[in-house]
Image 1 (cartoon, rainbow, N blue to C red):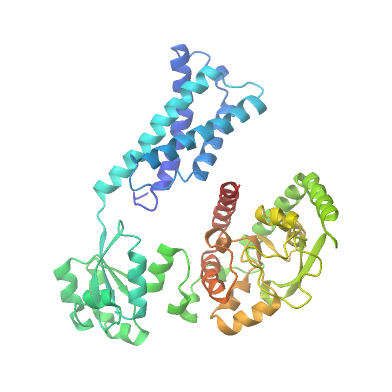
Image 2: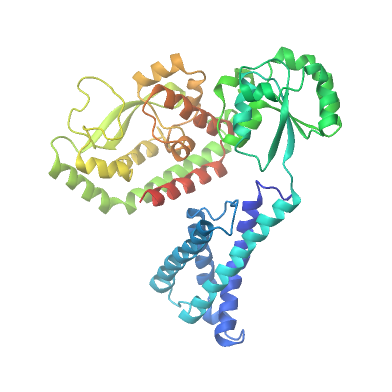
Length: 452
């Protein structure tokens, strides 16, 4: 695997899979001065669970994202806090669950080793990447709105790209006008004079076609050519709906899935088994929630609402009631952050997302999935279809309990916010895959623990 800034976190994870078990081996040596009885003092099953525990905590603490300054106070404090939190979790696993727990002396020495080795690994990658990689020199073809929007995104990725300038057209954006290097006919000359690595095309199809031969020659010469929407979605993890066409979206991987595909069948099995497991494990909690709702407010325990699902089919979504009874007698309205209709118990349920537990029955019925775009109400879907381009594409797949938009964007309570949130939903549809689903589920847990 080629070392890049984007896959360095995977290599750090691989390093942790080596260094965490190695730290316990070193802990044994520092405690006893030899490796005799290592398999007895540090059981392999315990070591596997301990390693998983640390990696889970490191993920929650963002320790797989390379920092700009690893030696700053906040970076060091976050790192020490992550190791201490990992030690607390592993202590519970070690002494609460294991029949043959790892000794306290080994455990203390191992944590010191983890602090040094795992931090050293990250520091090494941080300096290695700074030494090996310079930002790619980038030229934007098209100084219009698309080019200016691309430049705004690139301003947050200066470690990867250096914007050299624009070619073609004119712009009312002051910064774009300052960096305008000429018209499109000067493309080849500008590229060679400025040692350009990447060309981003932010042009209409007809304009791109006019310079097609030049772009091909530059590509054969080693210059990377990329469309503005492709680079935008790679960097921002969302689809720029104002700068794409329906034809562009036809290459989406998610659109190749069908109800008979193996991927959909595997996803369905995972949905059913996971939902059943969660329902069984949370049964005592559900009884407490039912009791709390009945004792504190008038009305039914469950709230049912019509939503739009896959292929625009309506279904009835189940939730624990979190608002006062008959809260929407006057019609459907946006739920606000501090909505006065929410009951005290409902506020707690919403904060912890426990009001959504009954939706696991929607998953079992096949109306929803664990991961997908959140289902909306018919009245809002009708409005969004009329005002937001490509909104109907989010209904290509089953809606989900959680989704890419939910873990990356705050609660949407307006048409503008829903438009932005759609860009994340479309990114999920475009890149849909079981590995992506797993990533979303992990990020959901991460957000839940941070919220708590």
